[in-house]
Image 1 (cartoon, rainbow, N blue to C red):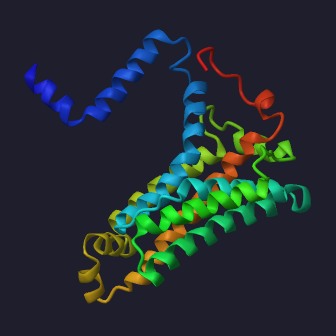
Image 2: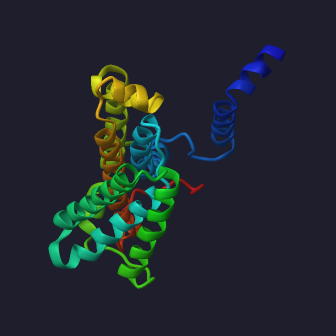
Length: 244
Protein backbone atom coordinates (compact mmCIF):
# COMPACT_ATOMS: atom_id res chain seq x y z
CA UNK A 1 0.00 0.00 0.00
CA UNK A 2 2.82 2.39 0.89
CA UNK A 3 4.45 1.65 -2.44
CA UNK A 4 1.25 2.55 -4.28
CA UNK A 5 0.98 5.81 -2.33
CA UNK A 6 4.59 6.70 -3.13
CA UNK A 7 4.00 6.12 -6.85
CA UNK A 8 0.79 8.19 -6.69
CA UNK A 9 2.66 11.02 -4.90
CA UNK A 10 5.37 11.09 -7.57
CA UNK A 11 2.78 11.16 -10.34
CA UNK A 12 0.10 13.10 -8.49
CA UNK A 13 -1.10 15.06 -11.51
CA UNK A 14 -1.80 11.88 -13.46
CA UNK A 15 -3.35 10.29 -10.36
CA UNK A 16 -5.70 13.26 -9.84
CA UNK A 17 -6.68 13.17 -13.53
CA UNK A 18 -7.46 9.44 -13.36
CA UNK A 19 -9.55 9.87 -10.20
CA UNK A 20 -11.43 12.78 -11.80
CA UNK A 21 -12.16 10.79 -14.96
CA UNK A 22 -13.34 7.79 -12.95
CA UNK A 23 -15.62 9.97 -10.83
CA UNK A 24 -17.06 11.59 -13.96
CA UNK A 25 -17.64 8.22 -15.62
CA UNK A 26 -19.47 6.92 -12.54
CA UNK A 27 -21.49 10.00 -11.57
CA UNK A 28 -22.18 11.89 -14.81
CA UNK A 29 -24.53 10.45 -17.45
CA UNK A 30 -23.02 10.44 -20.94
CA UNK A 31 -19.52 11.27 -19.70
CA UNK A 32 -17.92 8.32 -21.51
CA UNK A 33 -19.64 8.91 -24.86
CA UNK A 34 -17.74 9.79 -28.03
CA UNK A 35 -19.64 13.08 -28.22
CA UNK A 36 -18.27 14.13 -24.85
CA UNK A 37 -14.75 13.12 -25.83
CA UNK A 38 -15.06 15.03 -29.10
CA UNK A 39 -16.35 18.18 -27.42
CA UNK A 40 -13.64 18.06 -24.76
CA UNK A 41 -10.90 17.53 -27.35
CA UNK A 42 -12.25 20.34 -29.53
CA UNK A 43 -12.33 22.74 -26.56
CA UNK A 44 -8.77 21.82 -25.65
CA UNK A 45 -7.42 22.00 -29.21
CA UNK A 46 -7.09 25.79 -29.41
CA UNK A 47 -5.21 26.02 -26.12
CA UNK A 48 -3.22 22.95 -27.16
CA UNK A 49 -2.05 24.70 -30.33
CA UNK A 50 -0.92 27.65 -28.23
CA UNK A 51 0.87 25.25 -25.87
CA UNK A 52 2.78 23.60 -28.72
CA UNK A 53 4.31 26.94 -29.67
CA UNK A 54 5.20 27.68 -26.06
CA UNK A 55 6.76 24.22 -25.75
CA UNK A 56 9.19 25.07 -28.53
CA UNK A 57 10.09 28.29 -26.71
CA UNK A 58 10.61 26.48 -23.42
CA UNK A 59 12.87 24.00 -25.21
CA UNK A 60 14.93 27.00 -26.34
CA UNK A 61 15.18 28.20 -22.74
CA UNK A 62 12.80 31.13 -23.23
CA UNK A 63 9.33 32.07 -22.03
CA UNK A 64 6.48 34.06 -23.59
CA UNK A 65 3.91 35.71 -21.33
CA UNK A 66 2.19 37.40 -24.27
CA UNK A 67 0.81 34.21 -25.80
CA UNK A 68 -2.73 34.84 -24.54
CA UNK A 69 -2.72 38.42 -25.82
CA UNK A 70 -1.45 37.31 -29.24
CA UNK A 71 -4.12 34.60 -29.24
CA UNK A 72 -6.80 37.26 -28.63
CA UNK A 73 -5.49 39.87 -31.06
CA UNK A 74 -5.21 37.34 -33.89
CA UNK A 75 -8.84 36.31 -33.43
CA UNK A 76 -9.93 39.94 -33.22
CA UNK A 77 -8.11 40.82 -36.45
CA UNK A 78 -9.65 37.83 -38.23
CA UNK A 79 -13.18 38.74 -37.12
CA UNK A 80 -12.75 42.45 -37.85
CA UNK A 81 -11.70 41.77 -41.43
CA UNK A 82 -14.37 39.20 -42.28
CA UNK A 83 -16.93 41.74 -43.61
CA UNK A 84 -14.35 43.24 -46.01
CA UNK A 85 -12.21 40.28 -47.10
CA UNK A 86 -14.20 37.14 -46.35
CA UNK A 87 -13.44 34.16 -44.15
CA UNK A 88 -10.28 32.68 -45.70
CA UNK A 89 -8.25 35.85 -46.29
CA UNK A 90 -9.21 37.32 -42.91
CA UNK A 91 -8.11 34.12 -41.16
CA UNK A 92 -4.78 34.26 -43.01
CA UNK A 93 -4.28 37.88 -42.00
CA UNK A 94 -5.13 37.03 -38.38
CA UNK A 95 -2.61 34.19 -38.44
CA UNK A 96 -0.03 36.52 -40.01
CA UNK A 97 -0.70 39.00 -37.19
CA UNK A 98 0.24 36.28 -34.70
CA UNK A 99 3.41 35.50 -36.66
CA UNK A 100 4.33 39.19 -36.71
CA UNK A 101 3.74 39.51 -32.96
CA UNK A 102 6.00 36.52 -32.31
CA UNK A 103 8.67 38.02 -34.56
CA UNK A 104 8.45 41.30 -32.62
CA UNK A 105 8.93 39.37 -29.37
CA UNK A 106 12.00 37.67 -30.82
CA UNK A 107 13.51 40.94 -32.01
CA UNK A 108 12.95 42.57 -28.62
CA UNK A 109 14.53 39.67 -26.74
CA UNK A 110 17.42 38.91 -29.08
CA UNK A 111 18.05 42.29 -30.69
CA UNK A 112 17.85 44.37 -27.53
CA UNK A 113 19.10 41.70 -25.13
CA UNK A 114 16.09 42.00 -22.82
CA UNK A 115 15.13 39.06 -20.62
CA UNK A 116 12.21 37.21 -22.24
CA UNK A 117 10.14 37.36 -19.04
CA UNK A 118 10.38 41.15 -18.90
CA UNK A 119 10.10 41.67 -22.66
CA UNK A 120 7.00 39.55 -23.16
CA UNK A 121 5.34 41.06 -20.09
CA UNK A 122 5.70 44.43 -21.82
CA UNK A 123 4.45 43.13 -25.18
CA UNK A 124 1.56 41.40 -23.41
CA UNK A 125 0.35 44.82 -22.24
CA UNK A 126 0.96 46.32 -25.69
CA UNK A 127 -0.92 43.57 -27.56
CA UNK A 128 -3.75 43.69 -25.05
CA UNK A 129 -4.03 47.45 -25.54
CA UNK A 130 -4.07 46.90 -29.30
CA UNK A 131 -6.96 44.48 -28.94
CA UNK A 132 -8.93 46.98 -26.87
CA UNK A 133 -8.19 49.68 -29.45
CA UNK A 134 -9.41 47.57 -32.38
CA UNK A 135 -12.63 46.53 -30.64
CA UNK A 136 -13.16 49.80 -28.76
CA UNK A 137 -13.39 47.51 -25.70
CA UNK A 138 -16.68 46.08 -27.02
CA UNK A 139 -17.59 42.42 -27.71
CA UNK A 140 -17.41 41.36 -31.35
CA UNK A 141 -18.17 38.28 -33.40
CA UNK A 142 -17.70 36.91 -36.89
CA UNK A 143 -20.19 37.43 -39.67
CA UNK A 144 -20.35 34.08 -41.48
CA UNK A 145 -21.44 30.86 -39.84
CA UNK A 146 -20.12 28.56 -42.58
CA UNK A 147 -16.50 28.77 -41.44
CA UNK A 148 -17.62 28.05 -37.88
CA UNK A 149 -19.56 24.98 -39.00
CA UNK A 150 -16.60 23.69 -41.00
CA UNK A 151 -14.20 24.05 -38.08
CA UNK A 152 -16.67 22.47 -35.62
CA UNK A 153 -17.84 19.57 -37.79
CA UNK A 154 -17.13 16.16 -36.27
CA UNK A 155 -15.25 13.47 -38.21
CA UNK A 156 -15.22 9.83 -37.10
CA UNK A 157 -17.57 10.89 -34.32
CA UNK A 158 -14.82 12.43 -32.22
CA UNK A 159 -12.44 14.69 -34.19
CA UNK A 160 -12.97 18.22 -35.46
CA UNK A 161 -10.64 19.92 -37.92
CA UNK A 162 -8.83 21.90 -35.22
CA UNK A 163 -8.60 18.86 -32.94
CA UNK A 164 -7.07 16.84 -35.75
CA UNK A 165 -4.63 19.65 -36.49
CA UNK A 166 -3.63 19.81 -32.83
CA UNK A 167 -2.99 16.05 -32.58
CA UNK A 168 -1.04 16.02 -35.86
CA UNK A 169 1.17 18.91 -34.75
CA UNK A 170 1.68 17.27 -31.37
CA UNK A 171 3.04 14.12 -33.02
CA UNK A 172 5.18 16.16 -35.42
CA UNK A 173 6.60 18.19 -32.52
CA UNK A 174 7.58 15.03 -30.66
CA UNK A 175 9.27 13.57 -33.73
CA UNK A 176 11.04 16.86 -34.50
CA UNK A 177 12.38 17.34 -30.97
CA UNK A 178 13.54 13.75 -30.57
CA UNK A 179 14.60 12.71 -34.09
CA UNK A 180 15.42 15.80 -36.18
CA UNK A 181 18.69 17.72 -36.13
CA UNK A 182 16.82 21.02 -35.76
CA UNK A 183 14.95 19.81 -32.70
CA UNK A 184 18.08 18.51 -31.03
CA UNK A 185 19.86 21.77 -31.81
CA UNK A 186 17.01 23.69 -30.18
CA UNK A 187 17.26 21.54 -27.05
CA UNK A 188 21.02 22.11 -27.00
CA UNK A 189 20.42 25.85 -27.25
CA UNK A 190 18.02 25.75 -24.32
CA UNK A 191 20.41 23.66 -22.26
CA UNK A 192 23.46 25.89 -22.78
CA UNK A 193 23.29 28.90 -25.15
CA UNK A 194 27.02 29.57 -24.81
CA UNK A 195 27.98 25.99 -25.66
CA UNK A 196 25.50 25.91 -28.55
CA UNK A 197 26.95 29.13 -29.97
CA UNK A 198 30.49 27.78 -29.58
CA UNK A 199 29.39 24.69 -31.51
CA UNK A 200 28.44 26.85 -34.49
CA UNK A 201 24.70 27.22 -33.94
CA UNK A 202 23.10 30.57 -34.76
CA UNK A 203 21.52 31.13 -31.35
CA UNK A 204 19.95 34.47 -32.18
CA UNK A 205 18.27 33.26 -35.36
CA UNK A 206 16.99 30.14 -33.66
CA UNK A 207 15.50 32.12 -30.78
CA UNK A 208 13.78 34.57 -33.13
CA UNK A 209 12.44 31.62 -35.14
CA UNK A 210 11.16 30.00 -31.94
CA UNK A 211 9.33 33.18 -30.91
CA UNK A 212 7.91 33.55 -34.43
CA UNK A 213 6.71 29.93 -34.38
CA UNK A 214 5.02 30.47 -31.00
CA UNK A 215 3.32 33.58 -32.37
CA UNK A 216 2.24 31.71 -35.51
CA UNK A 217 0.56 28.95 -33.52
CA UNK A 218 -1.01 31.51 -31.20
CA UNK A 219 -2.43 33.13 -34.34
CA UNK A 220 -3.76 29.84 -35.67
CA UNK A 221 -5.29 29.04 -32.28
CA UNK A 222 -6.82 32.50 -31.95
CA UNK A 223 -8.41 32.39 -35.41
CA UNK A 224 -9.82 28.90 -34.84
CA UNK A 225 -11.15 29.80 -31.40
CA UNK A 226 -12.68 33.04 -32.70
CA UNK A 227 -14.98 30.99 -34.92
CA UNK A 228 -16.85 29.84 -31.82
CA UNK A 229 -18.09 33.40 -31.28
CA UNK A 230 -19.93 33.45 -34.62
CA UNK A 231 -23.71 33.88 -34.14
CA UNK A 232 -25.69 30.70 -34.60
CA UNK A 233 -22.86 28.29 -33.89
CA UNK A 234 -24.36 27.04 -30.65
CA UNK A 235 -27.62 26.06 -32.31
CA UNK A 236 -25.75 24.20 -35.08
CA UNK A 237 -23.18 22.43 -32.93
CA UNK A 238 -23.58 18.74 -32.00
CA UNK A 239 -25.91 18.12 -29.10
CA UNK A 240 -23.92 17.99 -25.90
CA UNK A 241 -24.49 15.61 -22.99
CA UNK A 242 -26.68 16.62 -20.09
CA UNK A 243 -23.72 17.52 -17.85
CA UNK A 244 -22.47 20.37 -20.03
